[in-house]
Length: 226
Image (cartoon, rainbow, N blue to C red; front, side, top):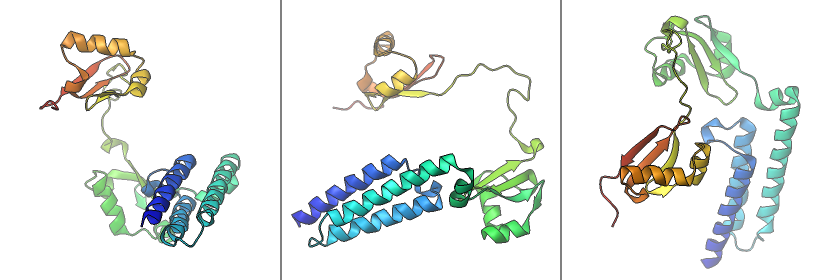
């Protein structure tokens, strides 16, 4: 039992390291080749974990080989557009200027029911609002509405709005996030000076964000940890 536990532990961290090394995205965003690699890695790991008679190297070596192959192919794809299109595929237009392309639907095996489902998921009430639907290489659908149905922006209204950038979570659940603090351009000294002004400590804070202009937003915990 202890041998199985140790083998499982080893392959868990090995596969985690390899997937991090390959820079894989969420499962729903994987390209076909990336999904194949992920499935093969999982199958390779199962056999040495469950059969103590099989040497660990029989799982580690193929896993390293697959990872190396994926890294090489990723590099080649960045250098060659033709190979990239062959491996990853190209976007396919399912709707153009408000008209559905039935041939593209057949080629991608996407049904009208799936189109209407995606419309609802992305917050559109009627297909007449959509100008383009594009089937992306990741398998996701991109919906581009007609201009008259797009959300108004300050630019549309002629309003000049100062860019706030992103909100950096500098404190999460009482813990200071130094990476986010550096990303906001603030120092640890600035943070604690800000906390002293408000009479709070990190332990009391559920979250604190700072945008690129230095504006902070703080939410205190309802109950302090004992």
